[in-house]
Length: 137
Ligand SMILES: CC(C)(COP(=O)(O)OP(=O)(O)OC[C@H]1O[C@@H](n2cnc3c(N)ncnc32)[C@H](O)[C@@H]1OP(=O)(O)O)[C@@H](O)C(=O)NCCC(=O)NCCS
Image (cartoon, rainbow, N blue to C red):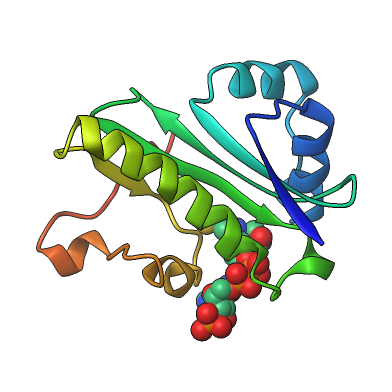
């Protein structure tokens, strides 16, 4: 059975998943800093084995970003990504009680938009907003 834990800051598990989904892990000291500065995260386990992860970064009240949603390839398609997103959205709803104007962003990888649309995310362009942008140098 899959179980979810909050705020586990394991460099080893994070980098393992990063490699597994093909993104190429950061150096351990970089990952450590990234996890230290993470507002909230959820890790999914099959028994004690890490199989999924997702985190929220941001200023904790006005702007939050969902980041690094990863499910181990052999576990994909079993709603683990959904469990992770739902848990992150629970936390986001708590923050919304404090600040109803909270804005929540994410940068979807190419062709992953449909996955996030299931949780209420829309493409900025469909809301008549500009594109999201990324520094290219
Ligand atoms: C994208 C990812 C997190 C989805 O996790 P998952 O556990 O496989 O997804 P789920 O089983 O919870 O799927 C939920 C729904 O999203 C859909 N979905 C899953 N992956 C999708 C994708 N890549 N594109 C479009 N829809 C997708 C499923 O078909 C399912 O639809 P349904 O509810 O109508 O049945 C996972 O495939 C993954 O880790 N991919 C590699 C890393 C990655 O790209 N992360 C996202 C970065 S933006």
